[in-house]
Amino acid sequence: MPGEFELIRRHFSRGVQHTDLGVGDDGALLRTRPGMQLVVSSDMLVAGTHFFPDAEPEALGWKTAAVNISDMAAMAAEPRWITLALALPASDDKWVGAFADGFAECCAAFGVDWIGGDTTRGPLNLCATVFGEVPHGQAVLRNGARLGDDLWISGTPGFAALGLQHLLGNIVLAEEARAVCLSALHRPQPRVALGLALCGVATAMLDVSDGLLGDLAHILEQSDCGASIEDVLLPLAPVTSASGDEGLARRALLGGGDDYELLFAAPLAQRQVVLDISQQLGLPLTRIGVMTEKSNVIATKKRDGSIETVSAQGYDHFESDS
Image (cartoon, rainbow, N blue to C red; front, side, top):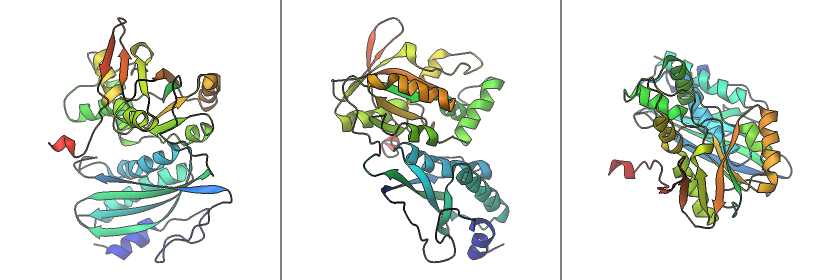
């Protein structure tokens, strides 16, 4: 079996486009463009927590890059560079090759240079760090939402959660829905173009990784706002399970997570701009509610007109063990 440095030589030494020095030395050499701020984010994926230990390696490679690149989209930043540190239980050349191909494919799709990282022996653990650039002072943060702002979501969140529940055996997805949901789970699509287009438009933004309601709570806390969501506006999955359970689709959308769609607030005056961006990108952007003055409170208006206050609680890696 190949050793650590042979694995790196075979699979991790990829070409770069906008890097002075990539893989091969003790560090990479980067040069940021004038007038830009550097944005840095890390995400870790652990076998048994974030993915099944027998997950298909190429798709896992894609997802490892994608969930990190998504963090750049969430701040209206352009992703530029990425590193990868991984612990491997064994030196499996075939597995590592497929994983590296998936990781590199995602990087290439979004113009990101893979510039280094580390490997070691241990339980399967994947940690990437992504670096991006945003015009100075133009990053979209979580703390800018204001009373009366529209609340928007991209795509159709909930598909990934439905795919996971199918794999766990908790639901049975119809054949058409199964392919869509498993693709959303295994090969998420970072909304980089959308994030860049929303620079100067959105007042607050993040990517939905731990459930729409749970992630919305971060915006509410940092913006000192509340939110009102209308059920009738939610972009529910058109086909969910063999039984067509609409309630299942709603739960997946609001609490499922792992979608990496962008959730953002924007002023009413920007509504047509957002709709124009949606048309230009060919990406559904759905207005699901409005920001309110009731700090840290999420109220949903149900289809029968009644108002329900819901818990703004997503997945917590530590609380879930209690």
